[in-house]
Amino acid sequence: MVKEFNKKIPVEVLIEDCQSKPEVGVAIAEKLFTRDKVDVLLGDAFHSSVTMAIMELAPKYGKPIMSVEPVSEEIAKKVASNPKRYWNFWKGDWGSTGYADSVFSTYRFMESKGFFKSKTNKIAFIVEDTDYGRSNAEKTKELFAGIGSERGHGNRSPGIYGFLSSARKTENLGPDVVMSVSPPFPRG
Image 1: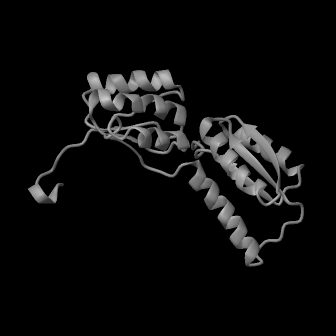
Image 2: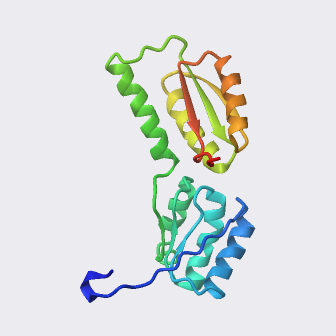
Image 3: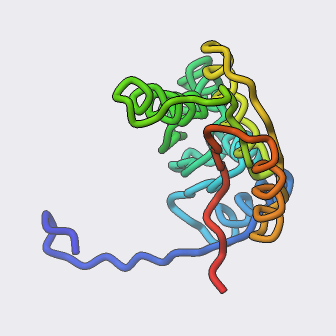
């Protein structure tokens, strides 16, 4: 219901799977704009590489495109370098620097308040082996390296079983903190 016009406007939502591949994402976005005649595209939900490919369609179609979750700092740099080209593209969430700062600041706050005392000065990462997982972990590792933390690292493939296996391996590293970066697990 749009109050200003006292009118209900129907909204149709179309969902497609880019398969985490930039070329598939672009093909699907092209189809959504041309065949399905969408008015707004909410772009890739997790993979920065797909978003960076899809955002190149912004000038071609002139319709709003929003990236929902990708974290690459390169997305914002691209927009800032040519705002006229990307006037209808926007990024709806933090970049990997924001996520890293959140993890690091929480760690430092807990440490400063005495909630936590490092015993080994080690942090381990269990991340999804995608650009989403890797970029968040890399930015976080940079911040922890600044305070002399050793870092363990265990990439995993998507899926609960890969996560559990990495968690067991990470436990052997004896870290004080374990950071997990991954999209939500599917139910079932």
